[in-house]
Structure formats: C-alpha cells, structure tokens
Amino acid sequence: MAPQFDVLRIIEGFGLAGYWTWEFGADRQIWSPGLRNLLGLPEPDGAPDYDRFLRLVHPEDRGRLDTPIRVRAGTLGQHRFRIIRPDGTLRIVESRGEVLHHSDGRPRAAVGVVLDVTDREQALRAVRFHAARERALAVSGGVFGFAALHGEVMDLPEWRALTGLTRPTIDQGWGRPGEPEGTGALPPPVAAAIAARRPYRYSFTTRLPAGETARFYECGAPVPGEDRGGGGGWAGILVRCPAADGGEHGKEAEGLIGGREIRAARALLAWTLSDLAEASGLSLSTIRRMEEESDAASLRSRRAVLTALRGAGVVFSLVDGTAMAVALAR
Image (cartoon, rainbow, N blue to C red; front, side):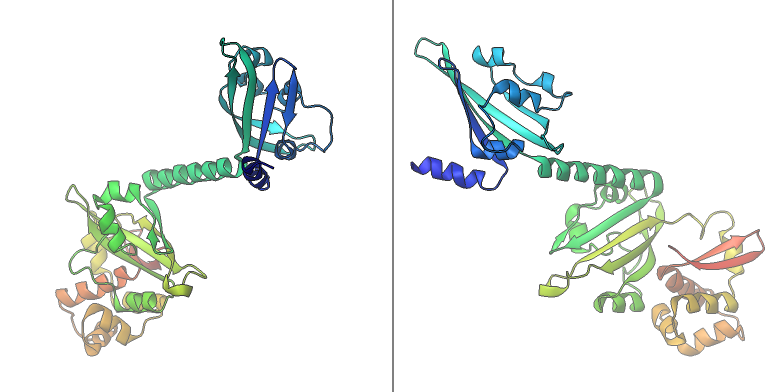
C-alpha cells in the first residue's frame, strides 16, 4: 500500500473525514470507508452515487450544493451543510472538491473530501451565545463575569470599554480589575480569604474615564481542581451597584447609621470587633465605643468604618426615608 493511502487510512480512523472520487468517462464513483462511516451507511450498501449523497443532505441546505450536472461541467466548490444519517442523526459537515481535466480542457474526473465539523460548529455556537449573553448583561445590567484559568485571564472587553483599563492592567490584577479608589488595598478579611483560596465578596469604588466614580460589588470563588499544579483558578462576577450610598439622600442616610447598624453589618460578615478594627485601621476601643454609642465618633473614624464595611459588601439603604436597612450585596 502506498504511503499516502496509509495516511488517509489513519486520518479516516478518527471517524471525522472521508473522501470520494468520480470518473466521468466510466461514470464510476468511489466512496472511502471513512465517508461511508461519516454518512452513517453500512458496508456494503450498494454502489456510491452522487444523487444518493444529495438525498442525505438536509432539505434546507440541498440547494447550496453543486448539482451532478454542474460537477460534470467542471464546477465543484467548498460548502458547509447538514446531513441527516439514515438513523436520524444530524451532523454538520464541510466538503471541498476539485475537478480534474483532460489536456484539451474537458472535465474528466472529480475528487473531494468531506469533514465532520459538528463539534467545532457547536463549540463556536456556544462561544457566540456566551459572548452575546455577556454583552447583554454588561450593557443592560452592569454585570461582568471574570475568570482566570490555567494561568490565563479571560478578556473583559465590556469592562475595558466601561473603565478604560487596558488588557495588560487587567491581566496584572484580574481579581480586582477596577482598582479601589485610594490605596487600592483589599480589606484584610478579603485578602485572607483569597490567600486561603476561599470564596470572597466585597465592594470597591473605581473612577471611570469621564471622571465620575462608580461602586461595584465583586464575588469570587476558586475553581475546583484548578488549585492543583500551582496554577490556581478563579471565577466570579462584578456587579455595578445602584447609587444607594450617594445621591440626594446620601448625607441623610449616613446620619442614620449608628451602633446598631454597625453591629448588624459586622454580624452579616461574621466579623469580630478585631476584624472591623483591622479593616478600618482603627483601634479596638474606638470600634467598641462606636458600636455602644458611648462617645461621639469623629467624622474620619466613622467614614473609615463605613468604608471598610461597604468594601466587604455591606449595603446601607434608606427605607421610607426613616429607617436604615443593612444587607449584603448579592
């Protein structure tokens, strides 16, 4: 057996390819075993026939293929279409052929190859669907998914468009693509969760290209199995928060956050007094006095505590203009 036929046999062994030939003078056609297998035809199953091949093509795609008359006349192109096997299975295939000519230019034969591209097409369809969904969530809902797997960072085109960040910047800080305003430091409990590969959540404020600021809530979790081999995979979501902390009622709402609300926020986070003191950069006694409302806290200390709590995902919302609700962003 010639080496080229050994190569063809190996390729057809994958079950995703087959070839055919058609000698016009003798009107003799040959279908390779790989093509019969791809078409779902038993062997032997009668003489190969181009018309029979066309009958296996999905009715909606049949008009795109070259007719037998056109093939004999020397026209044979490249096509992607669906076939329906005798058992009802639908596959997506791609065909490419060539017409061979006599020395006087008359067509004498045609040869072609058929490839099963079903898995590739389905994968591309899934990618397109995922991209469309990501765009819709980002544009309509301010929701951005992110992932870092096998050492590679998922591109975030919608996030880049919103924040003006470059791809290299996101690559360097994928878990926190919008650097928090100020020092950019993560709250200690959040940093500890990331170091220990535990799920985390917090919120941060970033400055947008037009100069305004926006608050985002971030939730991330390690991807199971990705921590083996030293890679460390993560996936999560970024959600743009409504402007509940600012706005026309922002200062009024701030004044309603007292010791009870701070204790509730700390309980939601399962933080100790020491955790809040560390996250806010204040002393333990200051935090205790603030929660007990035994002493008027300075504006700076108050802001430090609220910034730490909000940075960990706590949302303070004014209800009916008189009460303060405390919740975790989700």
